[in-house]
Image 1 (cartoon, rainbow, N blue to C red):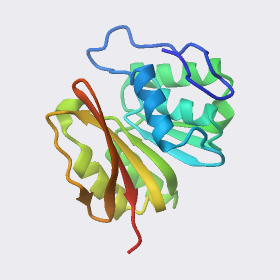
Image 2: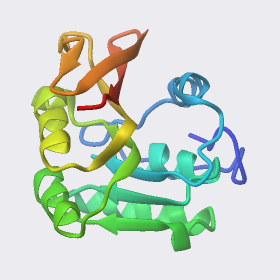
Image 3: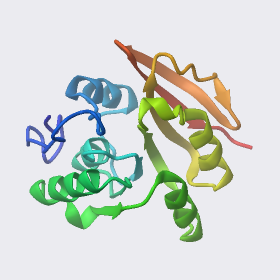
Image 4: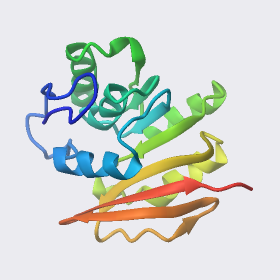
Length: 186
């Protein structure tokens, strides 16, 4: 795994010992995703739920995001996120929350945080796409017109709208689907 573009382009990311618990987003998926989102993330606040290696959030920071909050409750994932951010020289623009997604979203709401770009890449068995979108909207963690990228298994069909989130684009990569939602005006 490597950072695909930006200030850390070509730099290697540490990966998990096995992909049994942490399933990193493949380089080609990240490249296509950022082609769809726009190559650069200048000044964005980014939230990476179920961060794993931190690849998605760190890719965004490499591409100019002002700050990324990486969330993962797994000890191996936390170590990987920390080590990858340090190795890339991006630690000053990265915050790591070592808790599960639900308490992290509650904490971020209490801090009155809101994000322009959110990555949601849970273990496929959780089928957490819709519940996470509902929570993000309810806790007001996404700015108006902000985007949420949900990576999920092909077997987890997501609707074209969840609350005020409207499906903007969807890409398939074998058994993986990446669905991009945008928060619409009330």
